[in-house]
Length: 181
Image (cartoon, rainbow, N blue to C red):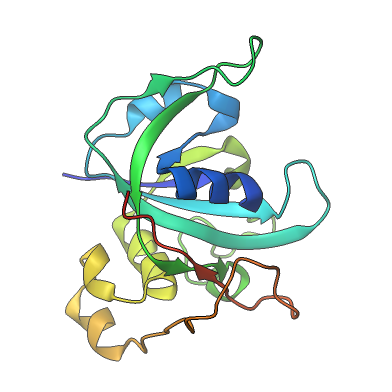
């Protein structure tokens, strides 16, 4: 049975991984990646646009499925050799977390809802994953959504001219280019 994960990274780092078809979590640690398995679904949450920045974003920024490859290590710099895992990223919309706070089990009723996100990589239940997927995906079938969500969902389609530039108003979604690798 597949599992569902939240990974946490700045949006600019998520976009790099999304474009290249990988995920990297917890500053390149291997152990969290080894907990995931092929077929698991991963959803990235980005508290900020840039790593270490004060440019708050607080949005889900990528969603996909872990591929058959094992975690592997690459050399970015002689002093930095992060671990990565390949992911098939799906076409999706970056989606603010705030409208979902009262509906997600890991945030509902918690004043300090962001605390769990500090762990960088953690498992969520299927209902939370489906709720986030419903908000992000243009075709709900990609995430095996239950009929109750599929029938009531309004399909959001990004215009062909959509880009990854920062939106002019806070909280709006922006198109994510698909990676068909």
